[in-house]
Image 1 (cartoon, rainbow, N blue to C red):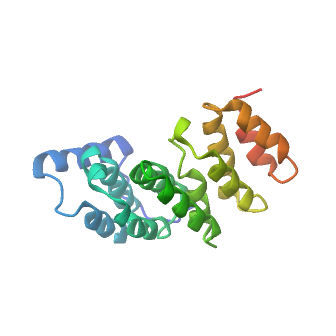
Image 2: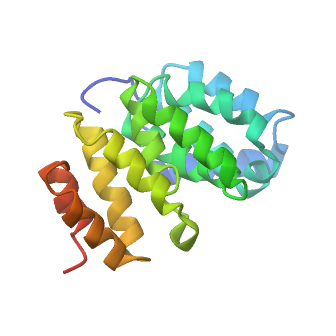
Length: 197
């Protein structure tokens, strides 16, 4: 965390159990997204983690729509760090948009052009869990759009997304890396090819 956020000191298993218990005992908030936004405004980092726990619960996630993406977008760029961005982009926004390819394309295309590198990272990771449903051309174009980035978190995301997609299409990932070896960072290449020959 590099001392960026104050902590209460609640361990992840305990925090998740607390969130589950609240949902079981009291029920879901009337507006889970508004509750998450309120948690985001609190200082302690566990509050943002609890917001992510809430938003990724099956019942809440099922009720979120593409209309909620602009509000989730604001969470991505507020109190940003990999620990929340890597939940919000693939596990929440990615899950919401999965059945609407046009919106996946529009969202990733918008984020990758933004100057905020956390949105750039989010664009690359948006399809992380899509496997065979991955829009390969979109993934590759997002990575190439920011191939010259010197930002560690963007380079690492590119490698991670390629490595994940390689479980589905290893030959396509290998061919992409070989075709663009001169453009991609060493970190991206190393991460992308970690599990393929």
